[in-house]
Image 1 (tube, rainbow, N blue to C red):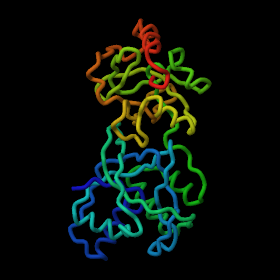
Image 2: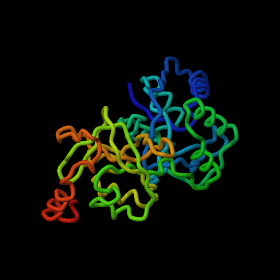
Image 3: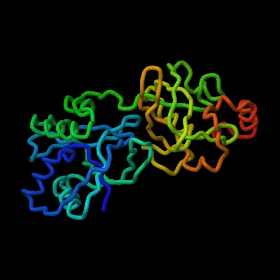
Image 4: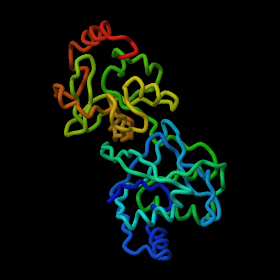
Amino acid sequence: MTLYFGYGSNLDAEDWAGFCARRGFAGARLEPLSTALLLDEALAFDRFAASRQGGALNLRPAPGQAVEGVLFEANDAALAALDAKEGAPFTCRRTPCHVVLPDGTVRAAMTYRAAPERFHRPHPHYLSVVRRGQAAHGIPHAMMEAAAEDRPAPLTIAHLFVYGTLMEGEANAHHLAGLPRLPGRIRAVLHDVGPYPAVRLGEGEVRGEVVELPLERLAGMDALEGAPPGGAPGGHYRRSVLPVATPRGVLRAYVYLMEEAARFPRIETGDWRSKPDRLAAWAAYAARTPEAER
């Protein structure tokens, strides 16, 4: 079985079943597993599909944005049907990706992407198919509707949760100076790396702050945390998305996780500020570590 991230007409079970029936793809099983986010991408109507009588959805790189879709499990017959429906490998091609699930975990998958063209206005029937599919999975229409008018979409994730040296009054707070902050809490586990903390997914509560992060600042945060773009694993930290409880309600926010944090001591309070020697530990670390490496 193959994990496939769908973001357009394949979200709609009726459209999918109709295509398979018309084209004779018996036994094609496309099983939805979870909603998911494809980080650092946006939707665009920048390819023409004759079968749709207008523009069809595509992906375009957009650091800081996130496409909401569904992670499916596809059997071999479904993969063949997907290739036929998407025109692979000529119109679209299979592309490896990493998607973030609602619990903050990451899964390797594949999706389809076409070479970008100019904007092509979508046919109303195609838009209705995508809306129906999105609604079936509880996915908002905002990014798709903006793409259909060739205008910028609102940010899917507009906040960053910080829990250590980036908090107000801490050693790295200057990186986020002047940005609005709110107190917040996430379900996770906090660990003591020495001069800074790390969070991993698990049963616990971590206290921190939610920052309204401008789009252009996210790449700098990735660099600071040693995180690969797109939420991919393999860096010092991994950028993920988690729900954050705040005085204004629950917000989804980016959060930097460390997959190997469990090898460090746990901070039972879940609060970095409860560590009395944290500023001294950072000062000692900064004195022996070049600025480009911390």
